[in-house]
Image (tube, rainbow, N blue to C red; front, side):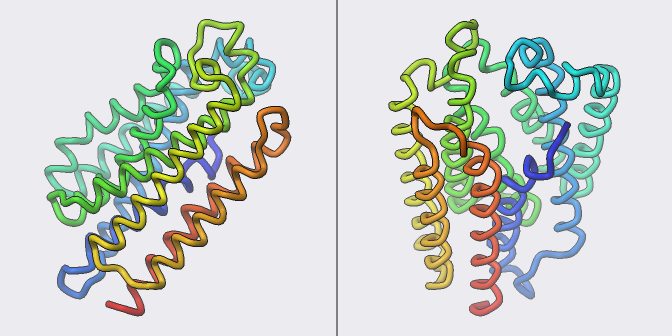
Length: 279
């Protein structure tokens, strides 16, 4: 019901934020305790978000040919089982937030509201993709708070980059449901703008995302190895857009799951290398 890729999208960006937040602290490394509880918080939050989405969308999924084989519509898992898993995931996230620091714990209900609430948004706004991006974009902001206990421009820029990245590729993913959305009462950017215009908007969102990543490197004084990582990320995103055409969606899953997983993991690897070489 919940794929590993659902967490790997945002997890590396949270770890990037942990590395950057730790850079100017004593020893320049995050504590193992903070890393552990950030990982647990990420797993809890994404598991809660996905299980809530599957619960809320069970009827919609059963009517949509693309999603009718999912676990709840096909009867592989009951709603009660998913509800129990949802409660456990929320509890795991709250425990992790409590273990990190007081500000993380105080803000945790707002974070949970964001990650659970986005599932409703397709029912009333075409900006549901942006809201999804926002709900995942708070991951690096929360990770920075876990280390520092306060904010700076860097995590906000990183959160905005993640929001645009996630929102942009969710628009691509939503192309698969264009025909169903048009016939239903659901909202999406492809439905509102058409497939070609939606892809164009996605490209601009990803262009701004790359610009924000470049800005983070300049603001935080990162080194050439980081900017090389931005080049790799940009190449992956360009390839992702080359794979998908308005009238050819056969490789959407490759673009959505495989390439976007490599985007986040690759950028983390280059930030880690920058941290190790230029500490």
